Length: 266
Image (cartoon, rainbow, N blue to C red; front, side, top):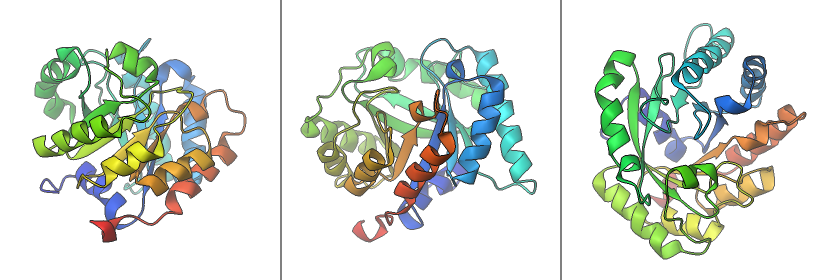
């Protein structure tokens, strides 16, 4: 991977040890106490890590506060350290960075029509990451229909549900630029996930871990995404207003871990 920092090593395990599942929190959608409870349930289900961020209704104080709550909940379980990482998922430089996390998914929205989401927000935040103790890991994100709030806020020129050719173009360009991760995202709360043919087409042409998220609301959809080629699966909406989070997460994480990593294919 070149840069053998903690997050790079973490995502590299999706190639060599097992596919990964990330539990994603939008601070605007949870109370503090509910976040603490869900972290414990997610750890019981053996989720591999946590994402924290939101597209709307989130400010820096919220990200900072929720980051501390999640970190404390992880540390209670892993008193000797070494627990799953907490990674920030920023929507802007002003609201997306905070202390307490292990690092930040340093996103460039590749199919945005607004240059802010390609590089300008990132340029605002980058100089401050060392002082905050945040490790960045570059990620080329591609928004796919329906796109959800992230696609709307990010002014994405959304890929169609069957537009695997453009998906391959963006993904191979991201890899050529040196992004260590590529992310196919149908948007939080999406009514449908990224289609398996798009996932499969992208997975075949890149040599970096492929993240897939949006619309993955049950174990069947998650299993389809992983079998198509997703190395890392992100789920978030499924934990919101769900009275059966424990069983839902357990089924989803098991569906991810049931499929062997693609090390032999690379």
